Length: 410
Image (cartoon, rainbow, N blue to C red; front, side, top):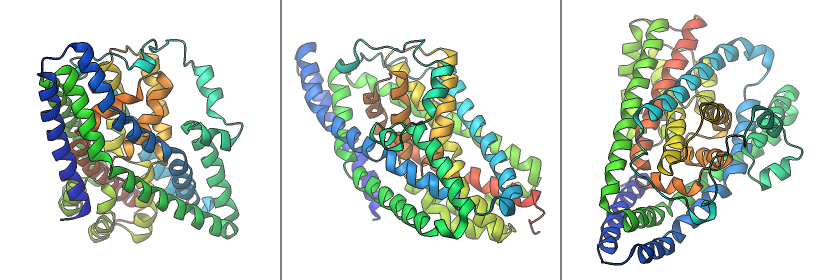
């Protein structure tokens, strides 16, 4: 059995064990105060896990985003193709994020949770005036990249990375050793993410046990509702992507979907769209896409066009707010959407990387990061769907750009 499959099995087992142990404690006849005390002690494990997740945010964003931009190459050479590619990516990102925001507000999957705020944020809500447009814009630009990294200021890191990546692309070969070093840093951080995820089963056990200890097994209904609503949203997103592909490729989009069946299933079963990357390149070239277009657009898409992950980020972020009965205004949700649209561009397509982005974003809105543990128990199931969606989105985008460039063979 592959390591990724074993980890999935361990997470599922930890989730079931956590439910069982939590149910036993909940039904042990202890008072609510005693149950709360027990749950808080169990929750120490999840606190450690969250700290490890936050540990990798800054270096992962910095390295992957700089390398992704720098590898675009000479702007004069790739400007036309890059412009068309980014136009598709940005449009798909906005649609995905907006769809997630619309559905989570329409379906309200988090209302049934009705959780109390954690002790450290018990007096904190979401201040309607805390994040204004003026504060948002001025806060984006860093005074020091070292300060931004030490405080995990994701947006500031992204701004610096964009300037740095463009400058590296402009000076060309002179920057090659630096880009290679940063690429190595990115791969090291991905490896560290893999190590951190080995701790996930313990965090999942603690998360499920803690929630069931205080709320009982009735809380599981909300998880079922969340998964049902999220996959319903993915089906809608698939339909939108296929319709967009049909507008450009006509009936050939259905041939493309048959071609990418294997990488689609690989991404779904491993919960990693990156696992499907080599096979997806092969199938796109067999479909008729030009090799140069594929080699440029597809890697770029794995940093800038994660459609399934985009929809999940707004869906999950607002879901956590709903669980704690935190009401977000429309302007705050739009600000969150714009924040996620920017911060998500520095994250590689690796399992559960969306949690890293969500952790860095919800804290800006005084939403407890502890709410992430609510998603850990089912995140594997969610990651399978969004990873497969990422494959569909990038395949259709690459084929569409090839068509626009008259580089799609019959």
